[in-house]
Image (cartoon, rainbow, N blue to C red):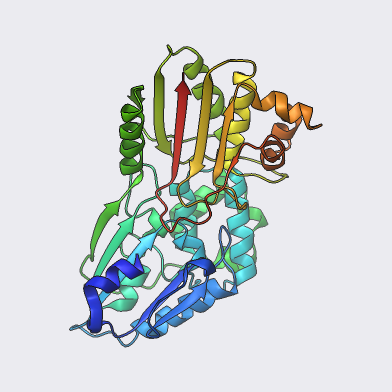
Length: 363
């Protein structure tokens, strides 16, 4: 995103701050400072990026244009926490949210309530400068306020909603005093700030359309699911695999979105790998079927795999390698089971995050 923007901005660039995966930083001008932010949990570099961003924007004037490039993962990779909230606090809250199975929209409400940069916070910092946000969405439904927790989308104070979400999830009582205090204190506002211009430039729908077009060129009868995938990865893997088995030969089903995994303790894996391992159990022994799910950024959960592709022989191969695929699923250890079967997809980081893509084929 940055390289594309620089082609348009050219010599007019005065300064810049990027937070993202360390391996994505190359061939950037020295005016742009880079920070290897953490994901899915923020790290020290995430906070350093937020601190530098705040310093940079403090000097922005009414004749300046602040161009904000926003994509999935930004909630963790750049952070400027509410006063009194520490990195350890953020990591604890985020880990609890990630394990809760809550939809990303609710997770981001809590993240935003603990941040000075999210839910319009960046726009408030930049005032009175003009602010334009360009968004690559990884969020089902493409709600702009939900991508990276909406740093350029002004919204009402989220703290009361965040507390209600945490109470319903049974997490409020275990939070630190600093977090409880931050969520009980009204956010200081800056009245009169104009709503920034925030535009969607790419989304999961485009990836789904492209996959459907590719399948058509291969001769498949394509059924595209227009409703984005949401909910527990394992349940969706079961449902989509059963639906695939009912299809006639020559059928392709394409869907996109982002699922969740609820767990207390876990092995190694990600939501797409868990979905595929569940599908592999349903498809076992079936000829001429394939099921694929992967993250478009090339990173599925805290692993280096993007996802997996499974067939009717995948579960058989996992057992042949000495593992029990159902036990692996129960332990949320999909990575090692799929690795044993040679089913993992590894693309490396792609540089673009438009959530997940799921494809089922009946030959």
